[in-house]
Amino acid sequence: MLMPRVIPCLDVRDGRVVKGVQFQGLRDTGDPVELAQAYQEQGADELVLLDVSATPEGRANAAETVAAVRAALALPLTVGGGVRVADDAARLLDAGADKVAVNTAAVQRPALLEELAARFGAQCTVLAIDAASRAGTAELSQGWELVTHSGKQRPGRDAVRWAQDAEQLGAGEILLTSWDRDGTRSGYDLELLRAVCGAVSLPVIASGGADTPQHMADALDAGASAVLAASIFHDQDMTVDEVKAALQALGVRLRRDRAMIRTSEETPANTQGDSA
Amino acid sequence: MSEVLIVRTGTANTASVMAAFERLGCGPRLCTEPEEILEAPRVVVPGVGTFAAARDALGSLAARVQERICAGRPTLSICLGMQLLAEGSDESPGARGLAILPGHARRFAPGVRIPQLGWNRVDAGDGCRMLESGEAYYANSYRLDPVVPRGWAMAQTHHGEDFLAACERGPVLACQFHPELSGPWGMRLLQRWLDTASRWEAQAC
Image 1 (tube, rainbow over the protein chains, first blue to last red):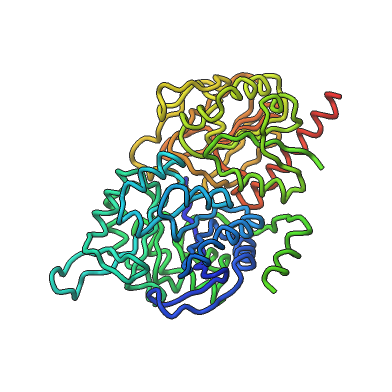
Image 2: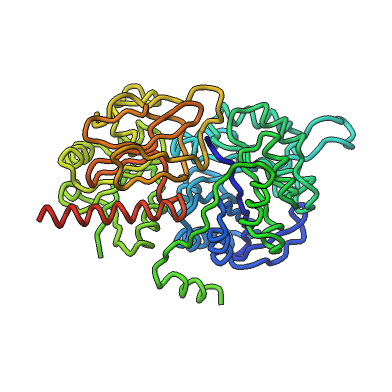
């Protein structure tokens, strides 16, 4: 039986891991390679690395960060940020990504999903959806709408409908972030999760708002195949293994394998040199 | 340093496979000449993408991979690389596989999340020497029936239905899951494959 995944998320800007609230007020939380190694040793099931660099120079360095993380990582690695055409995805895959996530570019040009699926396969093609509740907005009071351009724009599209369209276009997984909950640590938006998980047969990663293992268990109950969190791990409130132990106590069946991974002697030294 | 030759299958996550063997102290390198496939001490056929695309990318190399596996030389096929060893796939009806394993790759039956993305069991059956039971990372929409020819041992797993998780024969190992992404358990499996290959070479000399 397929087991749910616990996925730490690294938002990387200009080579450093950062975290904000509702995509704003980013603060530095560490070196991506050191954090990736730490989460791997704590028993993470997968890592997501989202490049949130604001400049083309920062973007160009993302592949280097991916390569450095890959050298140390024996886990699946999903990378997103700045992917506009299939060649952008190819560069990240060549650097060591296993899956590539697209967001705004796919909203603007849905054929991008078809191109990625045709060239790399659906299992390589992740659609990241940032969704905000319409409650309180003037024209519509129900459902969720897409938020694009890192939270800056709302093109007026329905998030659940977009998930369904994306499945038809060839996406293999949905990384579903609640804009309302991102960084607030008030729990995932379970209604949003239920709506999307019920509308597609793709695996869905719950994102935005995690604070406790109970939040994660609730998201899995709502249909999520994986739970993603950043603040809870970066702030060292709990290790990945502590979260997994708590989830097991809540009746969730998952993988716990914390044995150290043997690395060549050069790798740790290089890592320290890069981060110094 | 033990050499590992990685066959280009076009769309594969080659970087992850290379990184895994580098961590194990091997010198992985990409195959450039078709002749190398027959001569190299260890060959890896990775695979991410679609059956037809990978089969096209393999092109004339396919016959050499087939010859190598049939001769029982140390070879590791991963994910789509394992499905290429079957007769064909419903994913790409016109494309022919290497027909080392019986049957066609079929899509998972409705009722489960597809693709299967995540960690699932590996239950090693009788006769497995490299494969051990554990948990591994899978990324697939198509799967093979848990049936192998005589002389092969297999591991199975379940996602809505039973399917082939991996199979082995001497120093030949084929995995539906990704050992290079399966954490410490996966790294230990890769090490056992390398060790089995070394023993086979010592006997063959």
